[in-house]
Amino acid sequence: MTYTTIVQYPEKNFSVRDIVNLSNCKILVHSIWYSIQGEGVYAGYPAVFVRLAGCNRGAKLDCPWCFPSTEYVDTPDGRQQFRSIKKGQKLLTLNGKRLPDATTVDVVMRSFKDRDDFVVVEYTPEGSSGKKRQIVTGDHPFHTTKRGYVPARSLTITDELFHIAGYERVAIHKAHANPMFNPKVSTRVSDTLRQRYAEGSLLSYERSDRVKAFHSKRMKKRNPMFSSASVAKMVNTKTYPKSGLEAFVEESLQQVSANVRYVGDNSFPIGDEESGYLYPDFLIGRNKVIEVYDPTYPFYAEARHTKVGAKKYEKERTAHFAKFGFKTLFIRCGEDGLLRLNNTFKATGEFFKRVSSFIRNGARIVAVRKLKTVEWNTLLRRQREQFGIVGDLVEVTNFSCSPFNTYTVKGVHVHNCDTNFLVDKASPLSVDELLAKITELIPSGIKPLVVVTGGEPLMHEKAQELSARLLIMGFLVQFETNGDFVRLDTAPGATIVTSPKLSAHTGKYSKPVAGMLERSDYLKLLVSSDPDSPYHYLPDYLPDYVALHGSYNVFISPINEYTRPVSVGEVASMWTDLYDRERCGKNHQYAASLALSNHYRLSLQMHAFVTLP
Image (spheres, helix red, strand yellow):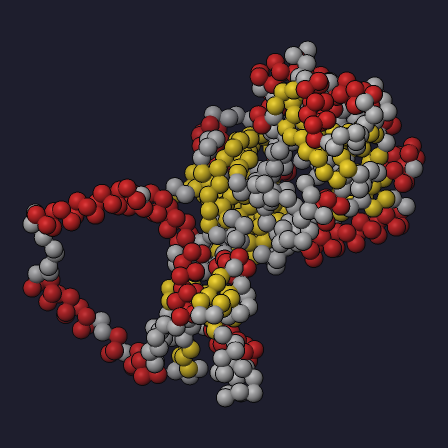
């Protein structure tokens, strides 16, 4: 059996093991589960879903989300070139609470792109006067603070990116490399030092008289109290003991960032002699402060001992700190994820996400532009010198990772490639074995719908036999395909739903191969309300399909936008913080307007509303 006839890029998508399994009459099955069909003509039906592995255009070759292999990605050990990353290595990322974490590379994918596929994203990290530049394919999603994941080419100067600052990356690298963070090593060192002190072989250090005199002289020369401004600050400063609330918040903030410093003892005045000085509770980096307070205290409450209410208090302090270049985050006890439980406190996930978002929203977009000729030539020259690659295309790399589907590049948080259809995670099954697994999942005597998806299910020549056997057994059968393969004899009696994909090269919907429009019972199109998105526009061949099958056989499906990556094992639900409800709402309204004006059918992902896989 030769698979070059049905696999567009066999050397990229299939290994020798996979071809041997397929030639032995096997089907590569990624997963099987029982749920509710959430969309399309059978929406609401109980269904067994069979996800087959292998895709002709997915993550292994035609994936549009990539970085040049000569660029660098962040790891706990420091930055490393994309080309050097191997399976099993750790990459730096932000987890669901937007705290720095590590994710493991499961699969490394490489391809080649031409100049038109790339854009240059220019941004300025917070606290830096310099501008950074990142070359990336135009569809790679960057994590913005307000719009969620946005393709690189759609970023604007109003966007800010989630960003792990350089000092944090250095601290993570030091902690990862420092052997003293290994409990066994630190215990052994401590035991050795105690033993040597006890034996007298190791004496404690004492400064000599000469060193003491040197430091005394230097302190007198550099004494800040010789400055009139410092004296004024000192006179106006009152020292306050750390409250129980501040102590708890300090401990919680240390879990978010190692660069948080408590200054609530009035050790860090902000202001000048003209405007006066105010004293924040916590200092983050060089230009961010956090204020923590309980709004029920009389000092902050309206119409109590003072006229300064909570809102006015925040407004005045925010304006003062902003005047001197500081951003301010206020956290109210009893709100914002910080709870008081009798005489103790508790920080919820909302607290950590809010603080982490404030700390790491530091990369402001300056521009998104096309590659200059000199930049393109530099990419070609570097890959020729470093990898020996000669040609007029640039090698790109991306990863499939777990447990987080993201990583950071120069501190900026980006999404990686979703590769659930990869063949190396699949099990080769015969048709009989697959049918047995399907019947095991369903209640006795029930013959529900069977949805065969992928990957690309029509790559499998056994798809026809699978469909015929299911139909004989009394099941309803539906295939979901991208339209790249036509099998006019495949699944007679089964429902074929074609959901075409975007071409990584044209940025438009790919047209199904000849004969596939005629064979497709339904056409499903994803849409976005964003005019900058390629999903905003319907394909040019849609009128041809409507002429063949009618407008009611066209399903318009709004894209669900995410605020964060889906965690491993998580079931997507519209009732959690996973979805960006504002952007999802706009996409749903846009899809409904297209359906109303063109007599198409609106198709929603019902399973997301009932929290089913």
